[in-house]
Length: 443
Image: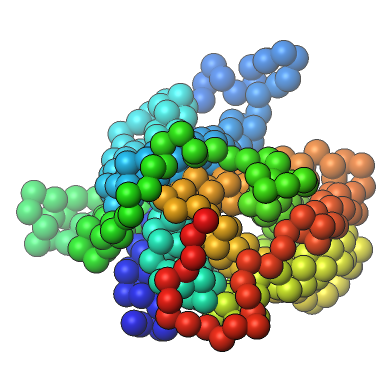
């Protein structure tokens, strides 16, 4: 045990951190790469589709969103596939290989549609790694009283990679934290056949993305194994239920997926509004970046303790508290006019997210039938990806009706999630009993 969790969980967490860092690199690098002229968009930009003019910004948005949509919509299928075959490690490694090969292809493509294809391949690779990795974290829990702590550690490392990746990416492309020009690097003279060769900051960033996938591959290959599985027939019973199988109402895992979708959407509302927010608050890009990162920082600090507290005191209290906090913290962002108050609101939103994320995954894992964790947990991972993909589109559309409107809409969604969780989700742990080392009961 390391950090109070199974070594294999820690290996998966570190692998996911390296993978997330590599992917978040590209969120920053690809818009710069396309806008730099390295990729030809002549004949596409300023074209018309159904009366809509294709701007450079829209073309960049398509590339970025494509990853999220393919990744998210593919996750139920890959999660189900890993359940049916009981070969989780194989599919994680396959996804990392696809992601690495696609990342390595960027320096060699020159057309916009080639970038679209490569980005789509990366989304396919992520669709294999994300739900299957989460399913393995769930499988490694020897009792329900370990699951929240496992997911807390896993999410913390993943968010470190995702949160710091964009910062490091900008430094790699420009050669430091203060520049705005793409730099060129000379490779070390001792490298065989490559010594002295010059590479651009873009190529260096793509190499870091490849390196992240390679490090993840090595960690999973060496330290992770498929858990022994009982002779459970997962074949025809696998499905994503909307209605509760045991009675009236909605299926609790489906409700947790809806809540996760709404939560993720409120996080991503902020991303599109940089220029508007900076003008409203009279601030620069540095403060905006700190405000945007405040949600991640709060999660890095709180995911592990909240995950472990949910093992001791139950999942439902933290879920309800998270959505209760989420409503005013999101709404406040539409009204504050001071940069410091915006930073506080974003940090409080991060506290809310931390209260929801690990306990929701743990509760879904508690309810997963034997051999179905990949399918069940993919509901939540897919929902989070879709929320992140839709958030910027929603805020970009709604802000034209007033600055407060996207934040009021997000707060409304959080309130709906609170009502659904309160009415449809019951506690999965018997908190009256002390934690034991017995295996978690399965339905």
